[in-house]
Length: 288
Image (cartoon, rainbow, N blue to C red; front, side):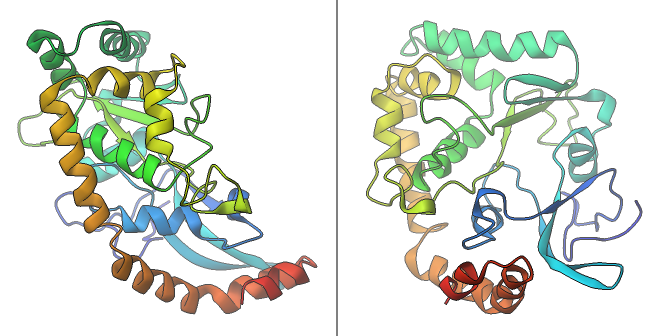
């Protein structure tokens, strides 16, 4: 589809992205009957970090002239997404979603799990082991990803299981593309069950998701990797400093409050109209 669906969306060279293989008409997911834009909002707030995000554009849907609700059009993360954002040929891209190979080869799949096993099962205080991690997974992307997922308390991510995670890499090193260095990088994906959704304990601002993942004894990849890496002095200090930086900048209270008001002012009327369209008066009234 040759169309600039997302206003202002550009690739790493500043060129408009105006060709898409797939897009998603997003109804809000688990946030569909509450704030409606929670995932898009968090990804927008974190778009300057070293983690890929999915652009969002508001649309009103009409079917045969009948209003059918308010939606957000979203990018679809797969090899075409990486190709359009970074200029890497999609035949040279590996993507893993929720542990399953989405693009690439079984060798790529094995390589990712091998590095996960290395980190979780080896002594990361040893320089050679830590350097192997840093040569296989982009350190900044990993730290940014873990910080945001735990700070917003995404309970549909590593709350006793792993879900809603995507990693990708270029299988060939391209010197003129910094991100095409053969390292695995992370993508924010489905952050809607977070930031107070449902009023649950696990999404509440009082919940310490970072510590829960640190002390949890489960052996799934991301929390287990963090527990192992945190034993390395260099990583621990870098992770600590990076986490504080994200709190003080990306999620600074004034910054978040200003952006949230902009979203609410822009989408309130459309969201309430969508709720009323489907008989959700309680949701429309609760939006106030």
